[in-house]
Length: 287
Length: 119
Image (cartoon, rainbow over all chains, first blue to last red; front, side, top):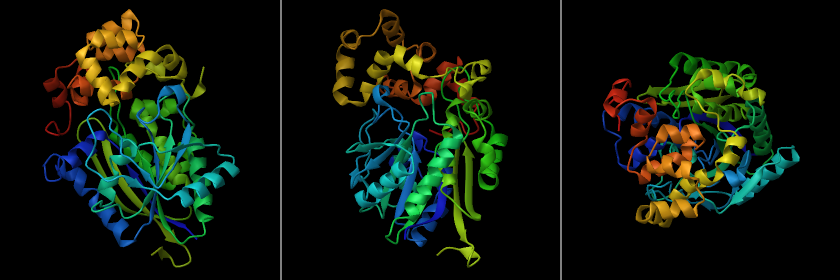
């Protein structure tokens, strides 16, 4: 049976991808960011994780507003990485697993999450910005991705509670898959930032840390907040943190925070957190 | 009104992009969205006015594009995530666009940040 053994929350700032491609890992301004991902990458390698379920958003790259899905699941053996206007990135195509994706899709739809399905379409920085910091990719990625896109651009957005419930449904989908796979769920975006209008540059570290605390210990509290609450507290674009609630919804049982990195350098509070699911029977983290 | 967004208007400097705005500015946003295609970028650089006309932009919209009025575009209902694709074509970084939207010089804006040297 497939099992969810951990969860990652990560920013997906496009500049992270750019800095990665330009090999700025040792640039003093970037080093604290890249160093913050190494323990997570190490953990993924050590635990031989097979699958990353990515709750991410498309930034009007693959989808345009003429048909912008609230929830969409990607099905395919591979996904190209999108050219977002600055040319292609030097990364191999992201690997997929049609049998697993199809199972998750069937389970979600039968569970009354009627997602849109996309095939043969590229993934943009919502997924591709943090991915190479989590997984090595030479000569190829060590596992597969299940991309689940969430509309956080065009209101009405799905509510925080709906995103949380999607995560719960994804857990049921994963745990009903017969193959022995180790799965980690990834919530992307945030934390505090606003990048449009005169309020651009807004941040709120106190709220960011509160969010992380509630996400771990009291996620229900976060599901009761409106989009306006998120926008007020963390800036307009931080509303995408509802995608972290999908990640959290997919987790059950006690969690142990393995690592957290918070780096607010310019406009986005770039954050990377890893939790592992504690096996209650053994009282220790699952191998 | 969508109860989920009640209160955003009181924040100031923040423009809700909902389906009404999206519908009103669909052509403008599509024009920017197309900048992810190399052909479109090249056609824009070769003949900006011709391409804007073909894309069905209003004169008001075309003026905002011509003037690279970043704040005006956002206020009119351009979505920032397609606007940033146009910024790549205009050879501006997001940080430079942020400074303009705040009404600051690039240097002034950088000085308000924790790590101004991050590029």
